[in-house]
Amino acid sequence: MSEKAAGQSGVSPQAGGATVSDIQELIRRKEEIEAQIKANYDVLESQKGIGMNEPLVDCEGYPRSDVDLYQVRTARHNIICLQNDHKAVMKQVEEALHQLHARDKEKQARDMAEAQEEAVNSGLGQSEGPSPLRAFAKVNSIGPGSPASIAGLQVDDEIVEFGSVNTQNFQSLQNIGSVVQHSEGKPLNVTVMRRGEKHQLRLVPTRWAGKGLLGCNIIPLQR
Image (cartoon, rainbow, N blue to C red; front, top):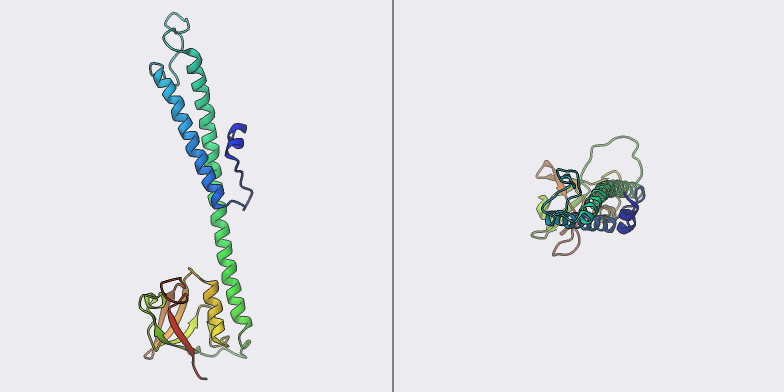
């Protein structure tokens, strides 16, 4: 990128540090360069449509007198510089988008790991041996149009797994609440027993018109 373009864009995202506002500023700069390129092409068009490659001398080798040679040379030079600036800005946009996407993926993985760790740490500890999973909570009400309803949960469903929470580490409904808070907008795997059959559901905790992120009421099962 030319010093002119770098100075005017005012954006040089560091590794991993690009933000949405950085990308918006780069796109604004890209559009500004495109407008300047068009303006310079308009200058060439006004000079008998001379373009970028037509000769500036006549058939006898003398400078053409039917066009403004200074304007043509200046416009051609500007277009070449601006096209280089445009390529550099597009490369910066691509790099910034890659950084932003990578950081979002890292945050999602970190949030999921924290939710799983918190659920395990607040559980009853490791069991001495593997035991078949059984239900630890029950759904006793669901709001119409809620995330729980959309996911397919039904009243009287018995919960076997809720994200990283299961019978072995479940201690209280706070375990489920913690996983829900850390997973807003992200799908959770939920396993329920319904009339003796196991069902796998995908539940996405989301803000909706009702209360909370699920729109259902869950109660612990007596053990």
